[in-house]
Image (cartoon, rainbow, N blue to C red; front, side, top):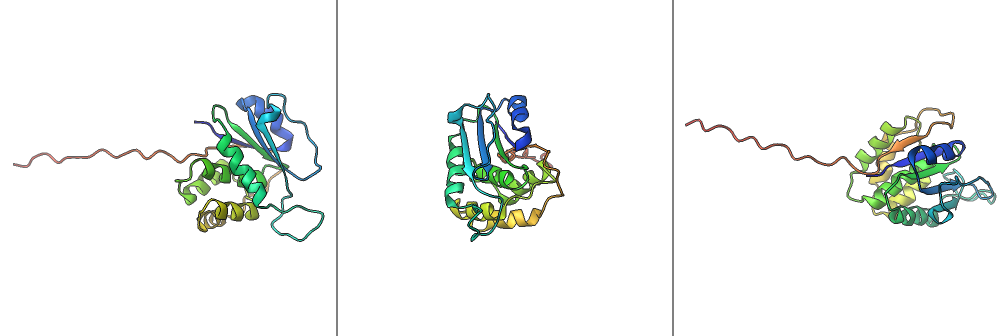
Length: 187
C-alpha cells in the first residue's frame, strides 16, 4: 500500500525523488509560484489556491472552501496508489496535514476518525491540521463531527521550523482476527 508524503515547499523535490512520488497535491496561496519537481508530470499535479486561515471576510486572503475540499477528494480518489502521493503546503504543518487526513478518508471511508488522528500525530508531532479544511472535509465526507472532534483531541502540534516532512499511512491497521482457543476436554 502506498503512503502520503507530507512536505514543506522547500523539500518537495527531494521528497518526490526520495520516495518515488508521481502524484502531487499543492495547497498554496494564489500567486505563490514554485517549480513542480521534474519527476511529477503536469497531469498528475493539482494546485489548489488557498491561504492557511480559518476565517472568511478578508478580501486579500482566500479561505479554504468546499471547492478546495472537492479538489482534494477527487484527486485522492484518482490517485493510482502505485507510488506515494506527495502533499505539500508552505510549511507542511497545517494545510497539507489536513489534506492528507481528508484524502485518507476519501480513499478509506470506513476507518475510525480517532485512529486516523492518532496516526497523524504519531507521524508528525508538529502537524496542526487547518481547522477550516477539517470542518469542511468532515461535512463533505459525512463524518458527522467525528473528524473535527478527533483533530481537536490531538490538539495543536509542537512549534515547527517548517522543514520537517513526514510519511503518513492513509490506511487503518488491518484487523487481525484473534485465534480461537478451544479449551481441552476436561472429561
